[in-house]
Length: 186
Image (cartoon, rainbow, N blue to C red; front, side):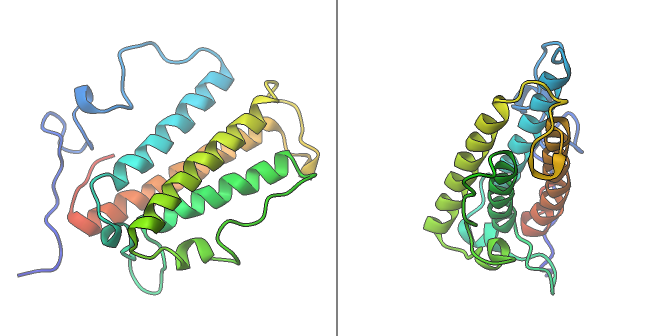
């Protein structure tokens, strides 16, 4: 018997999907968003939800399971990493009172991703809190062309960078989840 899980999908209509359209909270029958900012917000919301979906139904040991050596990447590590990144972006937006790192020095987000229920709950709470705080900081800048004092970065660049970061890590989450229990789907 192999330690490699068999690939499977919960979806029956489109087996390459995570869930069937009627059960996927990322899909709806409404028209797409109007305007650039609304589009950026919708894409970020979808990637954030995708990450949560990739973690759903797993226990702390599964969430903390590392990919392949020497990588320290795990689903739990990704959640912690994205909480840290959200805080970093907020420090760019509001540089006068920078918040300290959440998980210590470099790679603490991944290295500290241990299979403990309290740590898992804390990581998801940290992520939700940091997302809300960064969203609130960016809400003060409805003009996407405005440049932030730190590094002269435009608000548009921050939105796109956030989407890119989540999209990249959702790709990692696809592979990590498949390694944990074989479940596949975008």
